[in-house]
Length: 291
Image 1 (cartoon, rainbow, N blue to C red):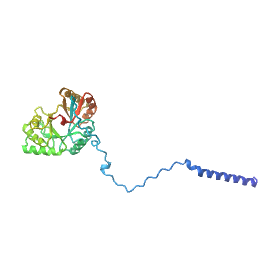
Image 2: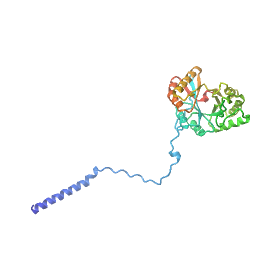
Image 3: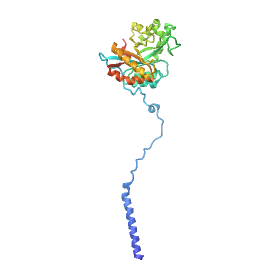
Image 4: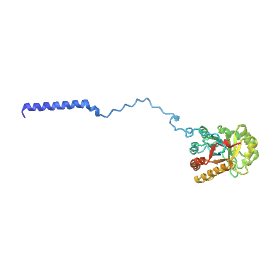
């Protein structure tokens, strides 16, 4: 190739490469992925407090569900959940229900104070589930009222149990088929209940119970249980008993039903409460049905 032509080809090649470089410099950035903002600089890591990291309590996240004004002519049903303070997961399931109901909390058990506080925060009713001596069993648990106690011992033990659940507005008996049939024992208990301005609901664990009669004679607002919901841990059975509570309320104007912190009972109530309301039932707190 002649030298002049070779120089021309070299100059053209250099010009082409120079033009390519200029184009890349001017337009290449238009096709680059945008750079992400730099992460903010962090200071020294600190351990969060338990209150900041723990999930909120189910009870405190539920709006208050106190009894609304009683509707004239409505069929009122008060549901009491006994034996609370032992199974918080199930008990919190009751607190999450959008209806008034009452938790009756045992004294001297692991979650006594915690569940009572959560129930009150959720706008539910709070009662003391007062242990009383049963027939044919050694004990009803810590805090038990026994028939062989003196009057002073009964008064002292009742005071101690009430102090365990200071948020309680009333109480009912835990077990107690022997103690609740003893008029002397009940007189001693009701004397203390009256000084605290509480109400009493007779769980009727014995047909021989005199608890409600003694309470009313002492001037304590009182009532008695009408329906037990869960003598069997079975959803279908408890649904049937809830239907019986509706029938009882329709016939008598109101019904007090007692259940327990069983998952089967909770499931039945979750399935039934809206149907019960559709039948004209108004759910109320236990205190609303005492007189």
